Length: 331
Length: 286
Image (cartoon, rainbow over all chains, first blue to last red; front, side, top):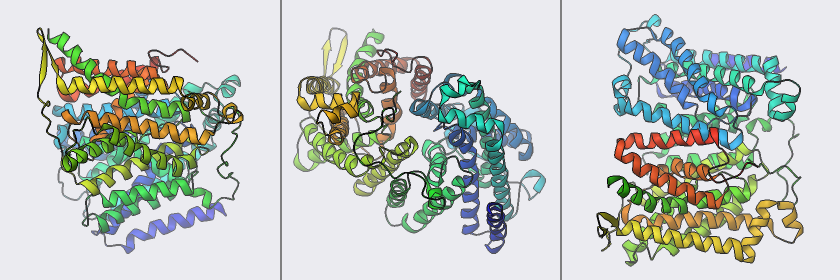
């Protein structure tokens, strides 16, 4: 039953691009929705399975985007190989950041990853000889050639994004059901208890972070080839990437395979629609509407839209009053 | 001599950093919530003081209590109607509620006030006192003195008044405080309102040497978190030490690095601090 639902969903997504104008606006919205769903799914490996709330995933995304684009500009290397290199470099970046932060939990981990993303942004802005600096970098125009990741219309991009989403979702689901996934969930429930039964928490979290970062790096290339231009402030941005990706997973339902997809289906179209309809009216209005929608969703479904479909097993927010001892998070 | 001058400037600016960050650490200490929208209340304080100056001709420093009151009321409402409702929700919902609030406040300001940068004219703006070979900028000094006074006022309030004690009791143990007849939810609202009010107060007193714009909060987010983490999350006295440290580090690194890299120094210290001493400079391991 559940499998039939997934196949049906995938079939709809596979047919939908054919119905849209391949050079039009809506296919772009669809592609971005699928791409951000895939990014949120990659984030979900760390954020959902290990419950480590990263606010710095833009770091890995940007490393991937810059790696493939710089290799293409400088050496004419096809972005398909650049994608693999970018994923590898993002995994290395994850190892570097993991050394000081893996032991941190909760708010401390969120703040440390936030700062790491900002470090990457400042470095990309400053190291202009490599990245082109604050003016940004363009993917050079090439005649359409699938081997060079260059296409005439938006249609192949939509399918690449769909394929990426399917792959990352399978990766997430595979991990969730693997021994690693069970270890991660044991750590999420109670880290000291997990360590007592012989789980090396630091190592398990590290593996999850590296996998998540590599997927994010590969998606950075997909984004670069779609956007054809980016600068450090967008690609390493806190608001446009790090926060948005985490938000999509959280709005949809953290730790579930369907959550990031639901979240992206809400967040990206709402944002695009608000931009399209309202941005001409007054500056700030579209983003204001976006913010209000987010607050409303979080107040309405603090555990994500996915609870809309699952049975009402989750408890309602407790009425003000006595809170069981230990519920308040202490650092 | 340049180094002594830089340290002096750093301490003067650091005092203000301390006051704007105390609110953030107070909210965390009492409620266990990290308010990502906190820096937006600095922006609100700056605009409150700006309009008091532009429309009523009140000096921004004298308008600081007005900025405090505006943010206090707004903060009370935000806590009562938004934050209170996610206190029992998972911490990701709490984080992202405040992120949503950040987006709403920043863009609300953009909508209301426009994107232009606004600054005030005051007679003391460019004045400075000379202490031998050193110079003390009058607006920096004024902001520092007021920071000191407001910090002391908060300290006295928390130590001596019944409300302050009740708030600290709630922070220590919510259940015990409830059993002693303290309305814990009211303490939460008070802590939040006081926290954002103090930050708005800081926004008003720096207006003589800063320009106000809807995006000014973004410049202070990481800075505030660095101050708070240096001092130990939730530790009010620590925030003072953290503020002075960050001000001095920033001022000293301006001697050696171009402006973009000054922030990098701050971020690296921030990450190292989290990794090596997450309980802060002055905290003890709990």
